[in-house]
Length: 214
Ligand code: B16
Ligand code: MG
Image 1 (cartoon, rainbow, N blue to C red):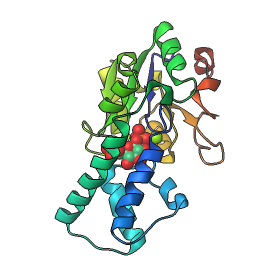
Image 2 (cartoon, rainbow, N blue to C red):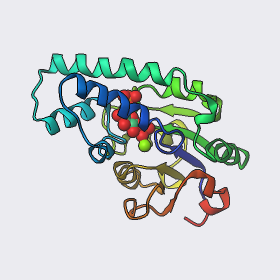
Image 3 (cartoon, protein in one colour):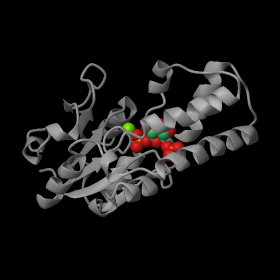
């Protein structure tokens, strides 16, 4: 039986990827280079520190650890500026409704995100009260595909991993869920997310009875 649902944030609940992209692009442009939208895809679900390392690698640029910390902080200040004015309307189609349905069916909910800004995003979009636990970039030491973020979520909800379903848009997140012994629903394209137990285009396609067939 499924007792808990663990949700990724960016790409599943909200589309903050566009804001991440704008802020990283501005940083890259200030440093005198650019990166493609295709490269940007590789930053989804990846931590802030690792994202910067990848962008610098693509540009063939080396920076000291201290410089990297300053650059990541600069990008984050622009990103935080943008998400500070997010609105409840920016929640992806069906996400709020699905969270409500899951809770009404007696299941617990947790967030499992790489972001250190998840609290602000959930507050701005009015979703905070729909989560029983929040596990995000502030509480993990290993990033997806490591299962830590989801294992901590299961633990916070007092639920065994095999009784949890993870909702994820990133390949690394699907791997993390599988490594943690959980069921996983991919949100996005079936060609990319083929290791998931089920793939949907968005949470609007789901209802709780589909979860019992996973
Ligand atoms: P922050 P998720 C991830 O969110 C984003 O997909 C990724 O692009 C970002 O770098 C990461 O959060 C860290 O975000 O800079 O706010 O700590 O998909 O894991 O919810
Ligand atoms: Mg994501």
